[in-house]
Image (cartoon, rainbow, N blue to C red):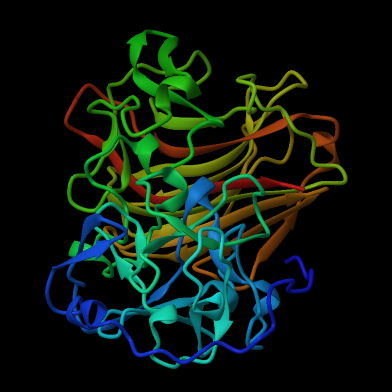
Length: 415
């Protein structure tokens, strides 16, 4: 994580009484008038505390910088990594967000646009009240502003408050079971592009003509009104970016299996093709497999330039809940080694972080310690790109048999 010092006003926070509106929001939906506008505070799901990652714009996680417990320590957005600095407890009764025993706090109880947020002793003041909205925003009633990622600095940018605008950089996915309706903060009424940054992904679907599946470019996927259909859509119950892939779907020329899957692209629309030497590259996701005939690939590092049509690795999820890492031994393919790495029951939400730094492959599940492997030197010089989604590993003629996977967070990082 970055360790740059806090540069905001170091004066202590004034202690303020919590507004009555935020107290009532714990059990009732109430109207609050702010700067002439009226907004509704959504009722919280329950009084129970829920702990997990809070994911926002570009798939980045809300993060206590350097896992410090010092008052005024900056709270930033950062690549999701499953560490304690990103393990937030959503207290629905008190409408607070807590990490490492401290609360998310608006600096000096400020109310102006651009006021930074940081960590502070939990004190029950309005500066620490955050009310989840049905559209995924986190409202601070004391200021009438929403938790905001500027969206311009990327990983390591300190979060702030800003006038609520229903924009992607103000949408936050709370841990499963928290937020209005327990949906985790994802907006159920928009296309996947309204909840996720799809500007660096191309969608491959199980439709089209044999050997030439349908592809949807990033510009069509982006935004609340972006592309969706029966194979790629927002789940109406919890807002998950959902992939459906029947086993009789159209396949690529080099595979017997169809897919509804995202392929990494560059910001200029060209196909991503990065090199692992001297770089650190991660693919982070929170997901749930709800249907799988046998096993499905939910994340992979595929080979780009270099002449191979094979992946370096694939992360497989099986019908019995087993999770296995498959690593090819040479670019020719057909010689992958499978390793059992975990088990999660079907229908249960889980997370992974796949990494490649030089020749070191790493995998962390549910924030646990990373498991590592060494990629064969035969892959040296090959370009790479990430893929994520639903690549079912069965084929047949039944359009009702296939895999279904929902994503609650998805991000990539290169450094």
